[in-house]
Image (cartoon, rainbow, N blue to C red; front, side, top):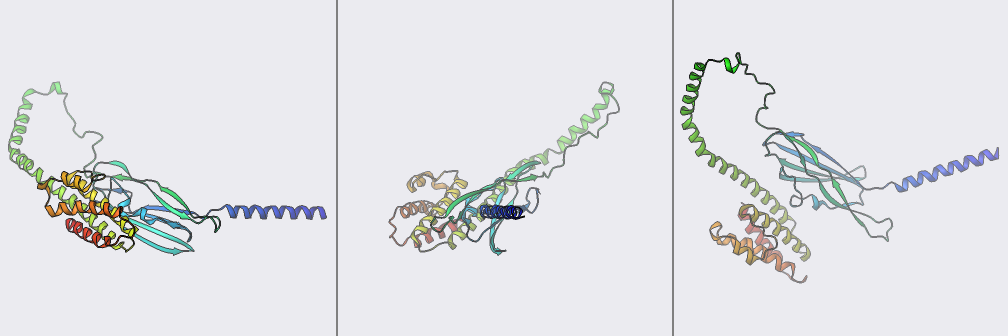
Length: 317
């Protein structure tokens, strides 16, 4: 009897230790979910792409990795992003709502590109430093639908006679009719040919408007993040330089990265923009480089950054 009781105690102790080990090994990391407002889009459609992150309160997520300047969802056009944060069931939930537009045509399968973000977890003990980890969100498959009708699998034209048995004289009225139709439609064809450049210019103007709107949104977010900390001012100048580089590449197809302000000024042709606009663009590179290599005790860069930011905002208005 005592032997059976001893065996029972040993089994219970083993089960308890096993459960405790499993509990200690269960990590409190981070999880994510994705959703899309519609899985198939037509040209011109707008969709909401949601990324939901759930983490323990002691896990710090690098939310800047989800900002408009740090993500790309090509071939979809990124219009705006909204970020919300709330406490749910003792965990922190982050929701990133991206508004995307589709301008692709043709029936095909595409993907919303994935992204990599960073997060910081506390060390196993108070003596250990926090650990920075990375997590990848995989791509999201999508379908693009065309505005054109699908090709017919079978022809609806049925020939009553073989070609060799069709009388030759029956083709004469058909050829004459096609010739008359071609002549009568010639003025319409000329009008369409003249209108093609106007339609292309109108399409480029619409794309230009969307690009400037995205630049204005990014500039507004940068203006909200301004502070008196010199280290942050240098980071803000870096963000503004990147935005100006995208602006220059979009309108003049010039890679501004790696160029000095003098080299950039030499590449910008005087006939393409006003002198004040050239000074505003090159001034951002000049001031950004000076601020980046200035000592930490230097002051006055916040006012200069605000002036440069206002100049660029006028160009994007």
